[in-house]
Image 1 (tube, rainbow, N blue to C red):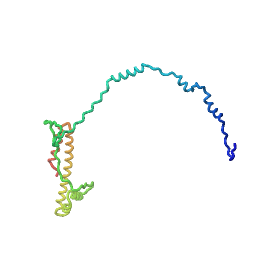
Image 2 (tube, rainbow, N blue to C red):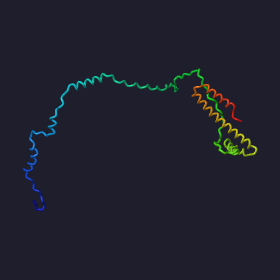
Image 3 (cartoon, rainbow, N blue to C red):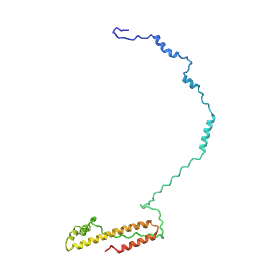
Length: 210
């Protein structure tokens, strides 16, 4: 159909045709017809009430209530804080002291003057180089200056050598004393410990080698 403006339009369908198209799908099934899927669901048998299920449930509840419940473990008691007196002093627990126990005292240590400088020696050090190093190790600037004078030099060098000997002797013996004290605490044989202490005391009272 052509309009006066030259635009084509589809003709409107009659009203009776439209109503017929809408009514046909509904009229295809009878009023009392049920869809197949729903009919299959309705045809299935429904579960029947079984009183034994409720009785079993009630019996299980009664058995669980009558069963003994697990007892929770008792937590360990926390240590009580150290009591403190009114004046601020802390009261400690009593200590038992056994009078018949033989407790050995720590071994004496050898004292020595600490060097002023840490100057380790070299592997291939000559005698004169070692004397010069010991003077700078054990003396200050004034002592080093005196060691270069002809009158004071030999005495200053001898004093530096003696100080180095005493220092080496003290380091060696103190290391042995530390080892013996540790062995005394861990040893099960007091006789061996006493022999080691006796030998150390002999070296201690003998003094450094001349």
